[in-house]
Image (cartoon, rainbow, N blue to C red):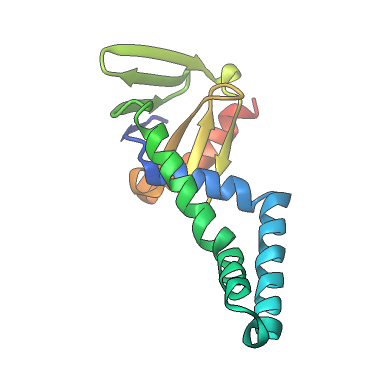
Length: 156
């Protein structure tokens, strides 16, 4: 079996990856609990609070659902500048083959560190710190077949 993709990692892909990381951890649970607590505090005390306290309550309420994702997107925009624009990925029986411009890298299946499947993207890790992001737009209809194929190659 052979799969070939042409991909360009965008700020949106990096943002989604960060958001999945945050909200799939204890940090995300803490963010949700804090936001729910702020809703309870606002419902209970907003009408009798001083204007300065009202502003602080609204700012605290906006911290995790609005401000944090915005800051993460701005960080992703900066990171996007350091990511290669066009990457060709080929997956076959020997492993992964990556072309960035005129440079080629081959990675054997035994050197692939893992795969992460999220609702809107997949990340194939070539090391503990480096991976290749494939979004649903790139994967298309073959997302599930491709995921099964990669899992079968990594488990060997």
